[in-house]
Length: 172
Length: 290
Image (tube, rainbow over all chains, first blue to last red; front, side, top):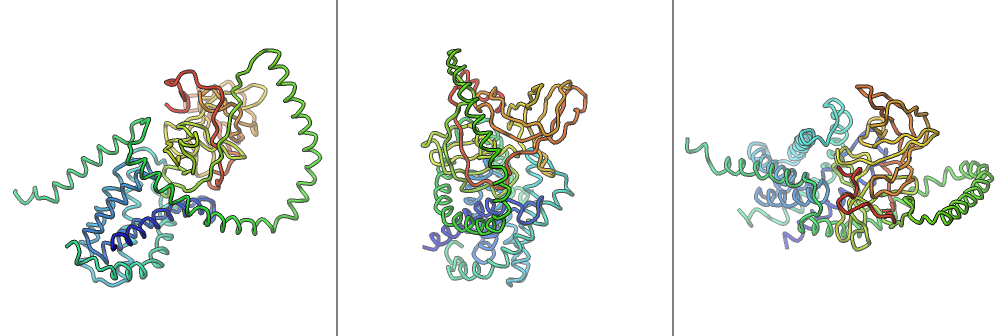
């Protein structure tokens, strides 16, 4: 049952990401800005923080693989990157205080890390043709703003749902 | 150092090897996807399709309301052009008939321009935005095949990159990929052939490369597909020339083309299947896919 609810939320975010990209691809937020929704990743980050590390990494790997297969068509990048970041997050949260503000900031920080790693990855695979300064201005800052808004909106409901499911006892 | 080779480090190394292997595997030119990928694509496509209807209903309504504001002005302009249109229509009709007659006289039935369209709705877009790709709700079951041209009512937008049973992903012309080429013609007195490859996404212009240096290209001339690639029909509009530059070594020219379609606002597309087939199956899309 727990996994059913979690998978359902994950699937919703997964599809919503693509619909969001389709709806806001035109110049709603200014002509040359590119906003990348990272809802799935934020979901996994919160799952790791409020739930458990194992479940976070497991969902990260599955969702990452789905993301690779469905959207980017280059297997492996998200599949390994998301669980790795989830692992780092769980390490971070052991040091940091576990309150909701800190959680939001950490989630934002890791979204930023993910963005930059993906950018470098695309540079290596020569799918990107953009200088770093241009990247910062056109993609990085708008993307972070969008995801910050999403984090603020979703963090409390997600925290409640994940804590209600009580994942701690299940896999650890 | 026994603690150096601990489990976690080993796991990290193994996953890096897996990463490189997987990337190598997926970057290869693949004819078919593996079945798990197809399964994932079809499943998420189905869910996307379910959500697409209400969402597009709402956004369509909002869009209609916005357009309502400009209706009066538009109506005035359109009325002014209506007479022109009637004239043009009779001319086109006349030319079509003449063309058909001449074709009959010659006994030539093949025509690179002929195609049959498959209507499709866009149900998603790659959120990552590095690979500009759309997902549409028609797949192999509806006759969509790899490498077919995808157009909107205003012009060419891209080609089918992957087709699964119920969905297909469309690679837009604006996506940066060396395998993404379309053979095109710049219309004018002196026709110039070239390849559309690459996109300047700061200025939103397509690049048409490999035009011979001695061709004189006028600004504002129209660009259409040439149909010599093997799969794309001839005569699909792409855009118009806004600027021409000579290449680094002076052997070729590059034309900057303003696309006739807005790549960021696509909702309904047509996948077109050319009626005259390519030369051989192996030769299919020689120009488009290299």
